[in-house]
Image (cartoon, rainbow, N blue to C red):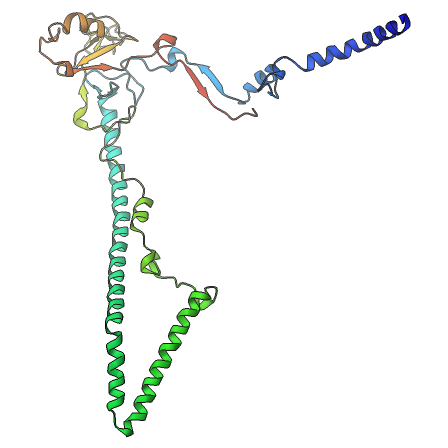
Length: 349
């Protein structure tokens, strides 16, 4: 017994390196559901630089749009040229007007193309209705006057004299033979549809070969959606009109010291200030009073303007609907908004 136990211990000692290798190859993650990643962490890290997998990057302050910059041109707005849309985005008047003019021209072309294609469908519908009406009238006439025509032909044959009787009978027989031949051909087309003579004939203009082939609802559904009446806002996507633009009175740092340009010179930095507290507007909540165009901090509005519903700068009365909250500026801090950009790329997993 001692010899057997000693031999078993020697064999177990020889298997220990192999068991350690198997343990390293089968990690705990690979034993769990979904643990089938063919790449290790270091391999994925090396492939990140070549564009493999989802790419993510932290956006710095230089990549964010500061408050007081045009949302289209991404540049500082000139004094007296700032406007806001109902969505709260700030634009340069020149940029947003040019955008609206360009989009209106594009919508006009799209609307003309849509009307042209819609008119083609309506013309085909009128043509189909005319053909359908003619077919129904012809069918009704054949059903209504078919018996009368056959009886009148028989009466004419019977009243004919003996000399003309043979010719009449021959004519009637020829007509009957022609009708029978036509019926045979029609029945052959129905049962022998693979014959060349039974194939439908192509007509110019893409018209249907049969009046029953036209489907008005399907033709209308195949048309592209009609273009909108007005161009959409560049950021919000809502319909935008020129008269909906709200002029803004932006106070720049240095302008209160006599620098009318507000950032062009005289030591002005060009940063936007609150019209009431003269604090720099960066990432704080900001509102504008539509009637006066004064831009101020939301906290200053709630403390000084909202209790009396009077503009602190111009002393003009306003209503609650005249107050619009503007889109705040962004910075590299996470509290200011989305600061991480991601780009999805397909992977093996």
